[in-house]
Image (tube, rainbow, N blue to C red; front, side, top):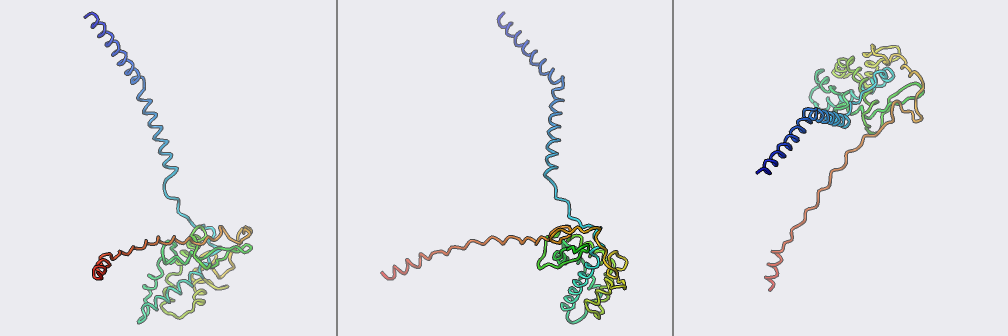
Length: 254
């Protein structure tokens, strides 16, 4: 029995050690240290998420380049709008579209993310000496900085000339070339976009210095648009063998 008392004493002492040790750890900031560790790990994980995540920023055009290409973009836009108007008249056949209908057809013509603005993808900016011009390519390209810059010049033109275009299409009395002069301007004669820098009544401004690379590209080389991969071919269906008919025929011969 005395031995039992000794054992209890030992256990009690051990409990004291355990209790005191753990409490000391807890009270001594053990949990605080753990929380600090967990908080630090959370910060690390958050940093890793930031490194990998989110969509890339949208590609934007360079507004400072607009005066160099405003005239050429305006002419390209007028040619495209003329085609759109011609198509609209052919679709109706029995009557001419109204001005409002022409304006509706021209909606989104400068938006490179819409089908109506896909024509912009086919233009490349080329520098010759210190002049930048638009060059129509034989196929559409990826719409990066130059494409977005042409889209900005296109939108600037539409903001000034949308109503004049619709009126001209409704009257249907001008050729594409005549309409270019009316909207974009001709030498010494400002057009609808006369308030924009780089309009066609004056010589186009030159770039600050000759910066054209050897291939003559402006800010980037033209990159043809990647074609989507062809759809996966469907596996051929196996024809079921007509065993029953063959067996019946064999029986008949017997």
